[in-house]
Amino acid sequence: MNDLILADRELEVGFIGQLDALFEGIERMEASHKASPSNEQFLTDKEVSAWLKVSRRTLQDYRNNGMIAYYQLGGKILYKESDIEKMVMSGYRNAYRMET
Image 1 (spheres, rainbow, N blue to C red):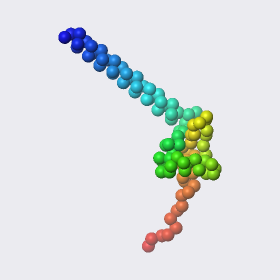
Image 2 (cartoon, one colour; image 1 turned 135 degrees about the vertical axis):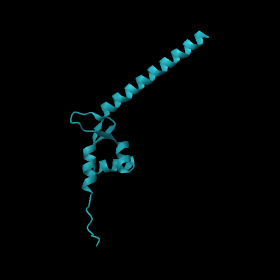
Image 3 (cartoon, one colour; image 1 turned 90 degrees about the horizontal axis):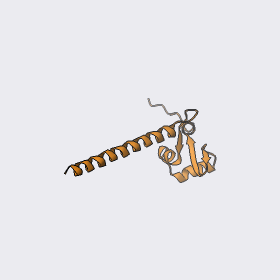
């Protein structure tokens, strides 16, 4: 009976250790994803397409037509968050009709 309890305890300790390692890995990934020398955040095309509510194919058209700034590292496309914000704000138009 004691062997069974010890075996269960070892599994529990091992599982908790694996969870801790997983959480540490996630924290490292999050820190490295957001950290850059200029404190600029870079976004993937998946993140930008979700933000702008357009398809990833539409983002490719934006790149091909020079409408959106991007970085290409190998096969990976990245966008500066500030560049996307500028692009969105450039399309902003004030209301011209005043309600009375």
